[in-house]
Length: 350
Image (cartoon, rainbow, N blue to C red; front, side, top):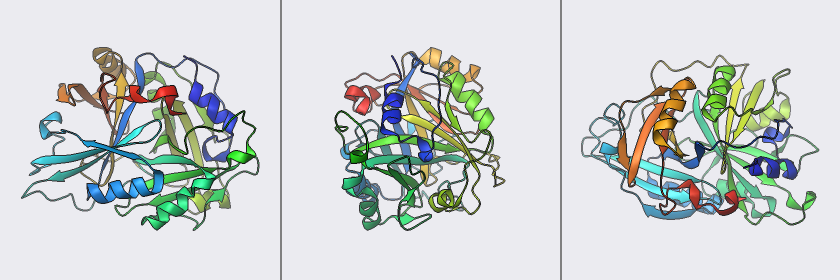
């Protein structure tokens, strides 16, 4: 299956950060098929759901049975007795809100959401047609700009404007607004909103690229900044970081991109221990896999680490592992009938 989403992105002229990188046309992997959802820990599921719905018109689906015994014992927060979970669906992918509960439970202290420079799962990007006013809607719903107050155009050749925001939990979201009228398309995309990518910020881009390339069956990423870092006042205005020097890579799955960035101007280091799953922010990415046993083998062969055992979640087995930076990944083969399945998106959510 050819990289349809990547081809659409090229047609839209909306390459990441407004600058063009290229990768050879290649078939997508048959083992790591897509992204079921990106997990995110929030303080108040109802308040966060209202924010995402107001800003990005996601659909709130039923609350899931995310029992603590679906997690390895060393991931389960101390004194937590329950997890509340709510799935939010965009046109092509999903986020799963989670909050941890218990009479004696206390959220971890001294650990905030992952900042722009990382390390960790740094943001989810929502891409919207310009006339939706998604950025203004997000601000009206309580978001705070990280950089400039207004969206920023990074290239005169690209009819896209960009902005980073944080919500009430300090969690970073990227907003891209696309001027569809400026594009030479036979017909406009059918959806006003979609999730463009989920982004990692890393202290070692080469190690992460090597892992993700192998994990996704030898895929070659689209890259920019390899020779000269992405920089300039407009880049700073988006990132909110003075003197930004960024190198980036993107990998394509059937319904979502994986974005990886390294800020070379900052001495970001890998954490000594993985982030607690109940720390505010993105806590896992759960992948749709065709064969769980083979996916577990692939993760290890790629340079990741497995967490021992398999668990039951949403009616199917799930296994957990980590990438070289310690980010938590889930591997699960769900039937199309499951609301959590990446197979739910006709036409890949385009």
